[in-house]
Amino acid sequence: MTAELTGTCLTLGDDRPAIRFSRAYDQSVEQVWRFVTEPDRTDHWFPSRLRMELRPGGTAHFSGDPHQADDTGTVLDADPPRHLSFTWGGDELHLDLEALDTGRSRLTLTNILGAANAAARNAAGWEVCLLALDAVARGERHGGPHSADAADWHHYYRAYLDAGFPSGAPVPDPG
Image (cartoon, rainbow, N blue to C red; front, side, top):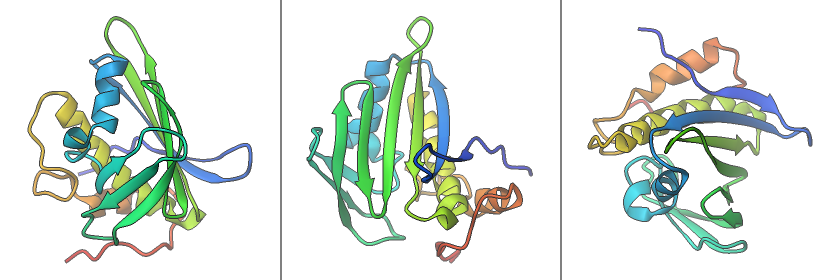
């Protein structure tokens, strides 16, 4: 089975490496904003339990990811319901929403990488997470990216390696 890859690897204007995903949803910008900011909704797709103060300088709390220690970050910008950015480890995450045609919207997730060699690993992770968000946005029940409902991360990781995304960062144990 071939993995359909939706991420792109890029270098931003300031020479920072990044990966980017874009998804269209049959919900309004305001509805998708709730999926990406409300804890009872992020729990179904985000890789960690995400709790944050939605204001520049606010704290973002990350917990419960079986592959990394609990952590905190800083909200860089929050412009509800259009833009949210925050730090996470050595990375930045930017979530941008735009209205499309009647009642539809587009979410663009940009992960600015602290190290270029994390591109394949993170792209595979975001692929799995965004597939969970896609399911939740369609009204389906989903246990999240670490559940039995989740797509196979290793399958996507191998596909991103084959696509030439930079690699070398530590990866989760397949056990």
